[in-house]
Image (cartoon, rainbow, N blue to C red; front, side, top):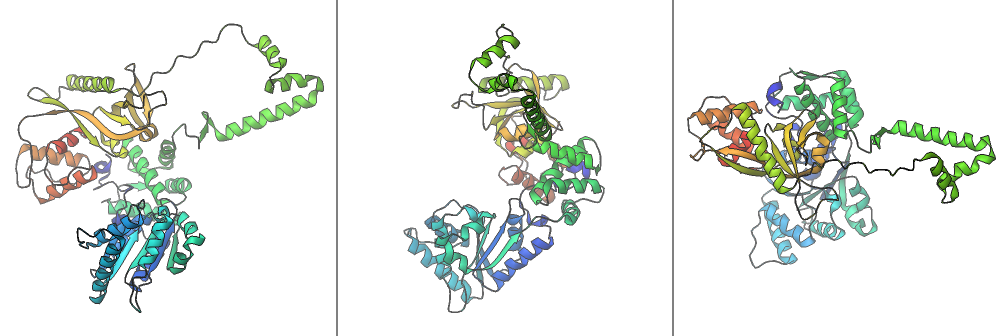
Amino acid sequence: MYTSFFGLKESPFNLTPDPRYLFLSPFHKEALDHLLYGINERKGFIAITGGIGTGKTTLCRAFLSHLNGSTKSALIFNPSISDRELLKTTNQEFGIEMDPAADSKKDYIDALNHFLLKTFSSGGNAVLLIDEAQNLSHTVLEQIRMLSNLETEKEKLIQIVLVGQSELKELLTSPSLKQLDERIMVRYDLRPLDRKYIKGYVEHRLVVAGGQGNLRFTGGAFKKIYAYSKGNPRRINAVCDRALLIAYAREKHIVSKGMVAKAVEDIRGNMTTDHLVMGWPRKRVASVTALVFLLLMVAGLAGWKFRKGIFGLSTHGQEITLVRTRHVSSRPVMPKKKAASLFLDEQTSLAGLFRLFNEKRDSNGLDGDGTHLGLVSFNLEAGHYVMFKRPFRVNVSNSPPSSLPSRPRYLLIRQVTADGAIALDTEDRDQAVTRDFILRHWGRKVSWVYPYNTRNLNLVRGMSSPDVLRVQETLNEIGYMVQPTGFYGQHTFHEVMKFQTVFGLTADGIVGPRTWALLYQMVE
């Protein structure tokens, strides 16, 4: 959304583990050196641990890019597997062809051993990297230990890298895994960034994303980023991405301390229990609690004869009745009117979606005659909603307890705002919702009304037409660097594929109906 405004080729603070963005702080460089040493020296087992969001997966992706062509690699990112599934997946990742009739653990191990011996005899090496290893069962970990027995008299045939959160260290110290723990020759625990590396980290990502120096953060902004993130790269990315969105909304090229503070507030949410208790700041609640406690002590010391009035508040005796009779009106207390719900049913949300589309078309004169209306649906990550320019609805992932679990509920969005969005409630009234609210209830399935033409609009490489020019201009507007020429050349083809990959479409480079529909949602 903000990339073209800042002159960036892509978003610099995505949470995806792209090895191009790896910032080699002293800790990350040491971890990478440990990995390369363990593999090149055939140490057998390597363990890389670290807290959530410290960059372990990104580091491993970068590590794999450093391996030479003679080193074969197998990656396992799903730790919720059985020991037999581990062997099967490992062989598939190494590209080992199996006899269709072979399905036992022995068959898989024999095939793997044959592959490893062949690789070793040709001067190669083999690496099995398992991410999120703290979630592996003891049975699977024991099977992994057994794989290390595949060796020659002098060398390990397979190098196994276990990557996981800090809990992996505790897991490996359990008595049942003592033999595995003793075989790990290389270990490294990845730490968050020190304060002095925050600036380098942020500027490194801006440069990789195509920044030319026209966008910068102030010294106060960097201090605020560290105060929130404590050097955790994932948190740095989250707050910087939000801060850039705020700067974009204010049309500023300098990100200030205040913008970062606002970004932190947006991420935490105005009503999170970490920051607020029943709408009150935690410090204020603590102060009020202390004051009440002090008043109770003073009242207690003031006279024994008032004990009933004080302690009666917490008993079930007559004292409660007397207090209520004297201080509470006899009129019945009317329940407050229940607030209109933001979670709509299928029929209401669909009718509202088409009504919002027609309102926009009538007011702007858009989407004239000769088109048909259809409802398109996509499974999209929550962070993509900030790029939407037209009304949409999204399935609610966790409806309120009062909702019927068997019926889907939807959040109907009129428009996206800098702080969240404007949603319609069941009484058809506009309600401002925060970004945190949207992310918390995001159910992935997103729908909107799309006006389409019956003629064939598939665009392929080599074509020249006004439609190609329209696609190029749209891609440019949302941050993809495409020269608007009207000719569908190689560069446009690659940018279209990149767009399709990011949003979960088939990356074939063909601008078909679904690619058109997604581009339509991102421009006015």
